[in-house]
Length: 117
Image (cartoon, rainbow, N blue to C red; front, side, top):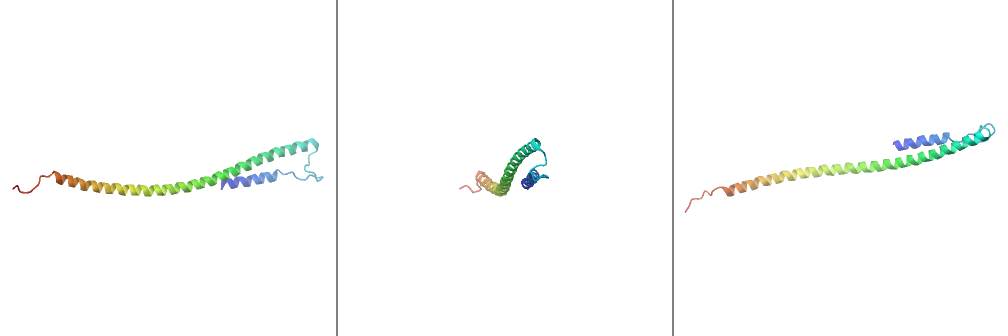
């Protein structure tokens, strides 16, 4: 899914944002204030990555909900097709009944062919 792909990208980005050991075993190869600035930048990046991870989780959750809704719509469409078929059958039966009633009314309107006494 697309949400999982986004989460995988975020994990890779988070891994690449981790501080690496410098030549003296420290967390950065930059001296003094530059190292603090770089670490502060990493903090911002990590905060943004957490935001992206949260968004990715929400997108993944939405994708699951969309899948559920899609299945429900499919079920509704199947029921709707059956209802339409039943309505068509009912309409045909009513038309047949109407034809019979028309014949009854026509027979009632005809003069009787009985001999008069």
